[in-house]
Amino acid sequence: MTIDPWLSRWLPLVLERVNDGRVLEIGCGPGDDTATLSAAGMKVHAFDISSSAVRKTKIRVPSATVECRDLREPLPEQATGFGVIVASLSLHYFAWSDTQVIVRRIRSALRPGGILLCRLNSTEDHNFGASGNPEAEPNFFLVNGEPKRFFDKCSVESLFAEGWNTLSLEHFTTRKYVKAKALWEVILERSDA
Image (tube, rainbow, N blue to C red; front, side, top):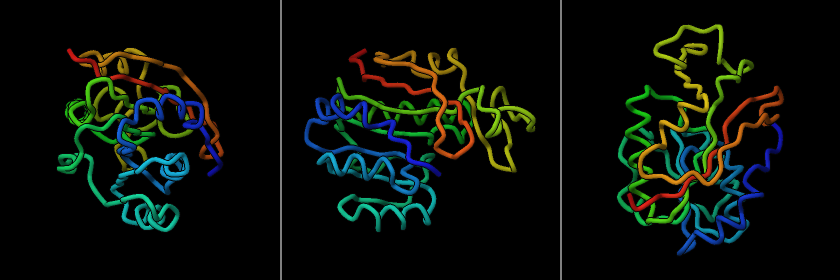
């Protein structure tokens, strides 16, 4: 893995919207974004399904609250009224219907005007499974036995069509995992609708 400072350019917006200083991070992995947010003075509540990732993040960012949690389960009871939620490359493991439910839960955890910063696998992400694997449903493959969803622009727009204002939608290639990884970076605001 290499350093991927994607979140740095969004810190001014995050600081503007964070409200009470609390940020929810979904799928923290080894804590890269947790460390960035914490260093910027935020109180981070992070979770990941991997107990190994949670252990690493707790050691790396002791000021953060970090727990092991499956995103398919309801969000923590205290996950309400957030001004900012971050979900970097963590919303792609699910069937479309489950993904829609998860996005509705995320929206419910934000206060009106709160923002979601997320990154999603792109259908152009061929180095990491967007082609050549058994397809369970459109753009949802079994990659080395693990489910992985890949998004095109239309599916990103569809996923966030109701209750969201899109502030930014950009396609990028990162070297986070050494090989080129294609992804969508999406910044959304919870609308009152």
